Image (cartoon, rainbow, N blue to C red; front, side, top):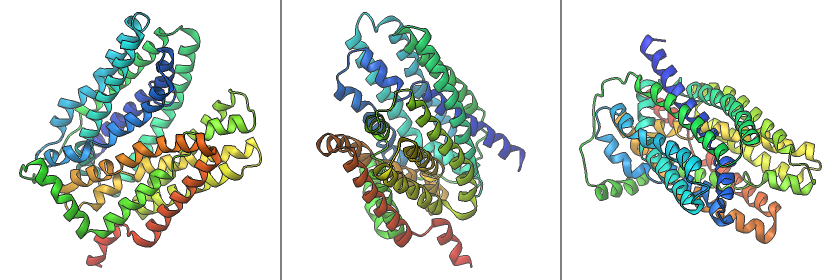
Length: 415
């Protein structure tokens, strides 16, 4: 491994891992909903937080990808605008310390606005960030890069969960939430410091600027001439629907077996174990056998988790669900965007393919959890798990029967 490659792998890995750990201190599953509830938010607002954040992360990418392709260097663009992914948590911390008790409704509005800025900017920068990784990390190293970066992030996230629990137990609200957001800001600041020292290689090409309407008009043509990509995106859409049970496993288990709330900690441990084992093993596998296989295994874990959720006879057996969910999350972390770099026919087109892989996923990622909540209210949690199992089964069938690994397709003509 060359000096520059080793330097970039460490810098980009630190950037990614520290960013994820920072977000663990402001978890969209725990800290943010709890802060919103403290501020008096209605359930519909609390429930919309993860949906809105998901829409922000995914939707803007394709609209920014065309501009990204015109840039000879991506790192200056990232450094210039990623600050707006990080500053909002400082604003949120100040709001928690000085505004929450005096104006809770205004603080809630500030929180939603800051989250929209964080995720919207992050989604717009995603094609540039992935393109940078595609240029500095070789294709046969990217799986391990994401696997071990996520492994470090999972370990850091586990530590962050312990720290946040201590903060919330020892310090009264809203100052406790403010301190959590300070921890987020510190981690994101360290992440930024790692990003700015990346050594981006000189670009060999850049695309000419075209109007957004003309750029978007090319997408239908692109999908039409690449049925393998179209089938892959269809499989992934069903895979997204196949994860709708993830947000309901804990609630169902606590109610079905009348388990104590402390058992949530056991579920969290199982989840992190699944993620850490999955990140270590699947990153290695992706580099050697391709990302299609990793995603098949991830969808298989999701199917197994839903089946166990439906059929588990005891609370102990239900713990397998969280291990399977951890493996599924690890598979997506390793391969979900990485595989889009390999679908791109040339390096200069990588931002467009990353944009396709996120923006076209956004409607499903936004609507599916909301629809699952309505289904749970109407027919119960088992119905949600059943729909998820059917959807992920379709995703598996499409991946196995209709999709070829893009790395294998590139290698075939030269064979």
